Image (cartoon, rainbow, N blue to C red; front, side, top):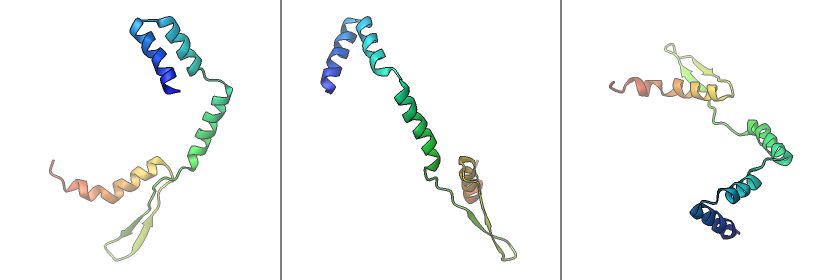
Length: 94
């Protein structure tokens, strides 16, 4: 199957046959209603993708322990990493 697609593409490219190449491309790149439904389903389902969000446990100077929670979003993940690893970056020479 792949060679049946690649040979004509190679010939059209080698000979500069823009018209046949464009027809071929337009046939395989047209987005119809079924592809839009698939796209919408994937976008809708992407919210359920597991994200690695970890809350931080903080030990204060007086010995009390608190848990800092973050929102389940990309911003929350970034904020969690910053809070967890900021000391590592502050010790680097600038």
